[in-house]
Image 1 (tube, rainbow, N blue to C red):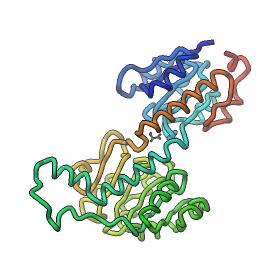
Image 2 (image 1 turned 90 degrees about the vertical axis):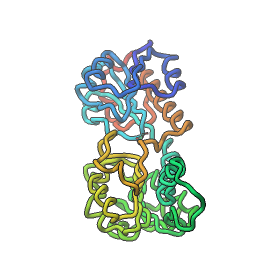
Image 3 (image 1 turned 60 degrees about the vertical axis):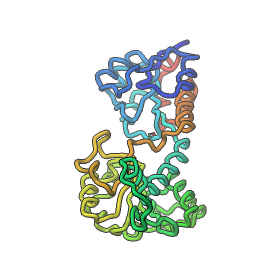
Image 4 (image 1 turned 45 degrees about the vertical axis):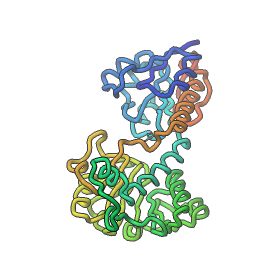
Length: 333
Ligand code: DGY
């Protein structure tokens, strides 16, 4: 039986077409995130919702969808927008898109590192603004990357992928996590260190920790003071992992050499003063924005939704305990 699916914002066509082949799909036609009120109105009576990180999925939203709602499929690997207990209690499966973003995000991390180290955006602005009057020995001197120490906070799939790519620059790799990770050590020769050593020794420090209460402001004023004055901080994980106001202060006082950021504490707002600093590269949360990655994310989303709506297990469920909570009458379609 055809069921109603609500997609909170346009995602790649092949994913929508796969859903449309079996169900009735409504896609938010506006190119903006909807307000919670709008979302609540639009999801009424849906069996599935395809959501984004910018949509808060909580009890009131699920109640507005009604008891027929069986899955919320995030078009993201992140799940910060989910109230997991609220969904589990209601027997609603929550899914994400793990794995397919790793290469794109790790490559983007390397791009950020190189862009900041070699001052590429700054030099490009200079040229475009017509200031270039010929080769000079002493301008746009950047930081060396090859053979330097790369510190990785968080040795999950993306942190490990960054380490593998950084071996091409013959970097010494140190990492910190809640416990040592044999895979990153075996693959890259990375060495497990405590946070103190990570901060003190890294020439480049890249963050790949999940956003949890314990990792909020993992880098704050105190940590920035313990970093080298020549260090570059890179963040393509989650904005709140850095105290952005403290970072602005540190960059303003040249306490570290620079930062390259894909994510921000209060997106899409930036901390006051950040945009005016010359020693920062800032891009608008685009780490996974490659054609192939976004298509694969869409494919996972549609497979998950179609599986659940036909009574099968979703492939990447983050709350499998929700699946057992539905009564036979709720699951029959
Ligand atoms: C994610 O998927 O969590 C990214 O941050 C957005 O692509």
